[in-house]
Image (cartoon, rainbow, N blue to C red; front, side, top):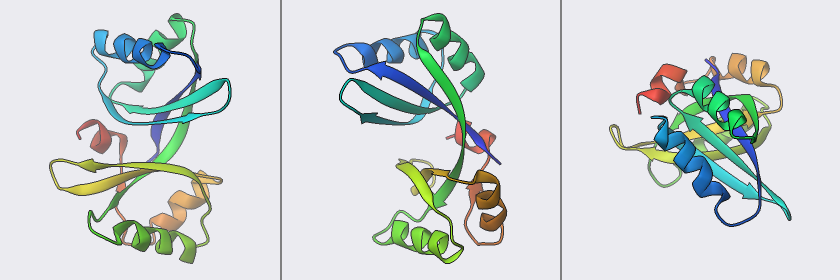
Length: 143
C-alpha cells in the first residue's frame, strides 16, 4: 500500500517553486499534498501527485534532481487530539517516524498524513494490525 512521493531538490532561490508548479500544472498533473523543507542552499520539496511517473519524467527533463520515495498515507481524525492518537498508536507498535506532513481531505473532513518511516516494510506490516486506515495510491489520487 505504498504511495510514491516525488522528492525534488531545489536551489533556495526565488522562482524555483513556481517553476515546479508550472511544469506540473501545464502537464495536467495535480498536486495532492506537498511539503517544503529548507536548508541553507537547497530545499527539499516533497509532493504527492496524481501521476508520479509522468511528474518524475517531466521534472527530470527540466533538469531537476528528482527521487521517488515510498511513503505510507494514513487517515487521521480531524479533531483536537486526532494526531496524538495516531502517534500514540505508532509509538505503541515501536515505529519511528522520519518525517511527516498532513492535510485535510475535503470529501470526508478527515485529515490525511504522509509518513516516512525508517523501515517502511515493518511499518506497513505493523500498521495492518491496527485500526488505522492506510490509503492506497488510488485513494490518494482520488482525493
